[in-house]
Length: 273
Image 1 (cartoon, rainbow, N blue to C red):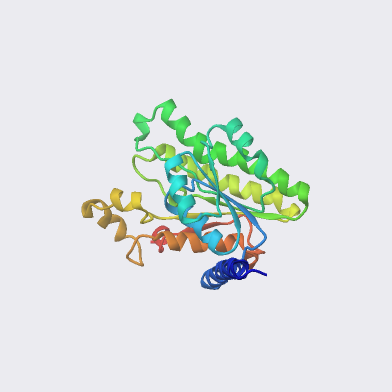
Image 2: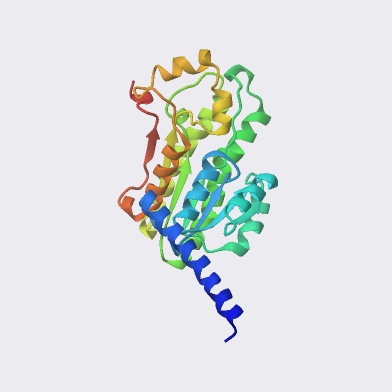
């Protein structure tokens, strides 16, 4: 055998070995190993969704990252070359189904895509209400329905995590549509869990407070706005992306095999205070 062939083979082996070690170390770091599982994450271009997609890749999952922003998916693909990216707006149900047809089956689903609207009750317009509900509730319902049917047909179960908000539990001024959509999402989570549980498909939600994503830091950088909220949080801080990601990974994993239909507050005690 030619020396250059041996060297090339060794280099290939080394790259594969190093990649495996990274996955093992990441799995040990997060405490989970999703090797052999395919995960779909919506709203994966930024913030919690992006961080979740990257964490799942690090834990060995075969990840499909969905976002409506092509530029975000391109940078994500650069950071995680093995990831599959799909550019589509989840509010377009037909386009979403068509895009996902070729990537089945799915074992794990994270419904993270969401939008907000800052309108008071007296100012809410039908257009803004429908925009928020279409993404935060309707898209979750029908995308989950689509994925759950695949899971049932395979007979291997699965796990779904919906990214809700503490805004489903408390009334926030100027968040009429958003609070309503997240409250509806929480109840959808429970109904899904009740109906899908017999098929060994668990459904839960995470309900974070303000999260210091890039967008969150900009939105809450004003002390006059942030301080009153922080004073109601016993732990004295807003959530970091990692706080939410770790909870999502836990609810996707077998470590939470008896947890179903739950809405997990990640609010530092805000709702209890």
